Image 1: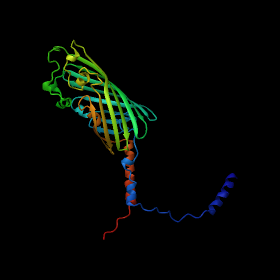
Image 2: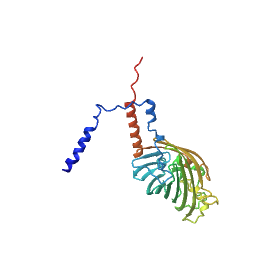
Image 3: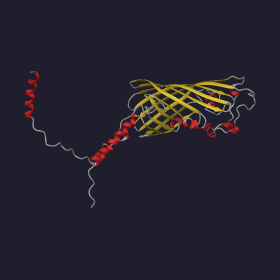
Length: 332
């Protein structure tokens, strides 16, 4: 009975409604200019505060790949990526790093990162092992700040024969093998010395984002603590340290503090297109040209959920453009 009482007024209301039109109303065709305005341009798609991954606590998306001049990285899991420097691998300085964004609360992110470099040269072996803690805070869509600290352990065993070292590695160190000898006075003859050291780096940065493509990056870093010792009865300052992996620059400060002899600062502009990132800038540093490492970068990125979304949006726009464009006028 209740259902019948509800159905009777609905039937009456339906009888009072006008009949639907015979066909649907056809929408007007968009012009070429209107379609161009609707194109999903990369620069207009909105700012991505967590797009930068090399100076921040952020990581690549799962399945995203970044191929850069310095490193190659791939997203493994949500908020985790791993990578290596293929150039260093090719010249015998084997390396790898792993980064995990462990904490995300609102606009605050905290990541841990581990890295290792190994340099075998005959009876000589050098190793760099580092662990870093990186924090990032998004103050707004346009501005974020970053700070981190990294502690590294360095160990060298034996005396390297530079004739076995890749010439490219020596050029990167700015060293002529004919002019270098670690033990010119024969103090280490007949023994296999071992040298150990540790150092702590502090890094700070800020990013000003104008849009998804354009941003400015301010960076600074310095060694705030460094110490080293040898397990042989030789004064550390008397050793001519090998020009490999920055050991000579890190611990040979010429009487200056570690901070005074290692600081770098740079200001860069970065353009991030659909797949290519280019960073150029200017800077200053205690060691000549050390700032260039922080201010210059070229990388190619592909894969990941964000780029898949952009690709789907562009494909949809191209399909709509082909369907909605008015037919071309017939030839005269």
